[in-house]
Amino acid sequence: MADSHVIDYNRLMRTVLAPSLKIQALATYEAMSRRAADFICAELERRPNLLLCVSAGGTPTRAYDLLASRCRSEPGLFRQLRVLQIDEWGGLTAGDPATCEADLGTKVLEPLGITRPRYHGFRTDAPDPEAECARIARWLAANGPIDVCILGLGRNGHVAMNEPADALTPQAHVAVLAASSLQHAMLKGLTKKPRYGLTLGMTDILRSRRILLLVNGKRKRLALKQLMKPRVTTRFPASLLWLHPDTTVLCDQEAAANISVRR
Image (tube, rainbow, N blue to C red):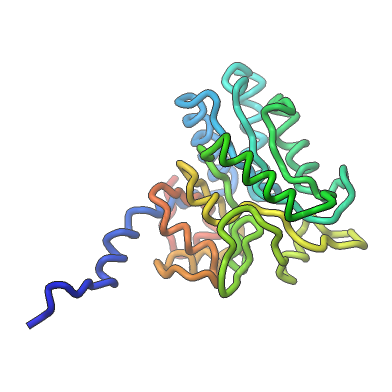
C-alpha cells in the first residue's frame, strides 16, 4: 500500500510548472519584435508608471525601435514610464560605447524620453562594485517590484549576467563572467575586456510581475531546446524561469526549430 504522505514530486512539478512558461513562436524576428512591443505597450496602458527592466544587446533592438515609433505617435503613453537597467559590464570607462548604458541610451532612454529621475542603472566605473550593487538593491527594494522584465537567453543559459554555477547569488551582485560572455558582440574590438559583471540576481528577476524572454536566431536553438525541458538547475540559470508564474517566451522560427509557429 502506498504511503499517503509521500509526495510524487515528478507529478507535482509537472502540475506546477507546465502552465507557467508560455511559449509563442513567431515566423520571423520582425513578428517576434512586434509582439514584444505590443506586449509592453499593453502593460503600459494598464500601468502608466510601469517599471520596465531592460536588457542591452541585439535581440531586443527591433522591439525597442517599435516602442520608439509608438512614442513618437503617442508620447503621453511613455510619460511616466520608469526604466531599470538589468546589468552592466564592469570596469569599463564611463561613456564607453561598449557599455550597456550607452546601448540603452541610444535605443531606449533617448527615443522614449526617459529623464534621469526615471532611469536607474549600474555604473560601469564604480570604485566599489559591491557597494554599487548594494545601491541598486536598495533602490529596487524601495521602488519595485519590476513590472515587466525583458530578458535575453545566453547560449550557455545565462540570464542577465547570472552565469551557470553550482550556486547563484539571489540579489544584485558582482558576477564572474564566463569566457563565452566575454565574446559578446558588444565587446568586439575592445582591447580591454570587462573584468566582471554587475547584475540583478535571479531573485530580483523572479519577483517581477511579468517576464518577457526574447530568443532569436539559429545560434540560440540549442539553448531554447534545453529551456523547454522543465528541469530547474543553476547550471542553466534560464531554467529558473519555470518557477515564475507569468513568463512569456517569444521566439522566431529560426530559434524555435521544432516548435510550431504562431503567425
